[in-house]
Image (cartoon, rainbow, N blue to C red):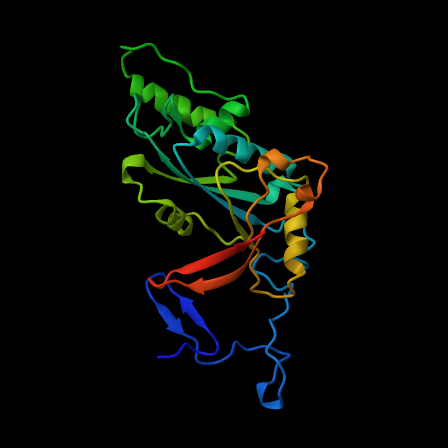
Length: 262
């Protein structure tokens, strides 16, 4: 069976052929016109008069990590610190750590050598769990109370950071981890998925929305390989070049593969 001229969509378990074009206000195949993307609109579900220019239009950022809480915490800190409007940024953490350390299972702080991203972020913000001596009665309960107190005091921890945590023994790779994003995503207008060790330009939120607007496509997706950290701030052509992923093909197993071009 030949592939549909309009392509295929993947629903998480199988591909479905698209048998008709996506509706648009400015295309007419019968008259020989080319099918074009649907331009972005300012209609949204948040009551804003202009979702592109609003300082409060929410952006959801998904960050999975595998036993990399310390670098993930630095990424979260920089994410908020460099945003033009950090109050609109919502983070979704998928944490795969060693949760077999001392303390109650509810505190989810993991071991000292394998901290969660959330708790390590709070440490960076000046809020840290108390250290209890071994043998203290009801230590688990006390640590749980400490955990709640830290989260309440930690900036943005309870209002702008959501998380899913499970033991690293249950990990099944990056695709499996990223699938948990669906449990954290709310009704945010924009979505971004990044790795646990990233840095950001100043006002990255404004820049990302402006670049998305240039696609002139309501369903446009921006995707690229980030510049290496070692090239940050280097005064050379490399410093302003961004590797692009401009081609996609379906592999023998039916999985989409991206061709990377520098």
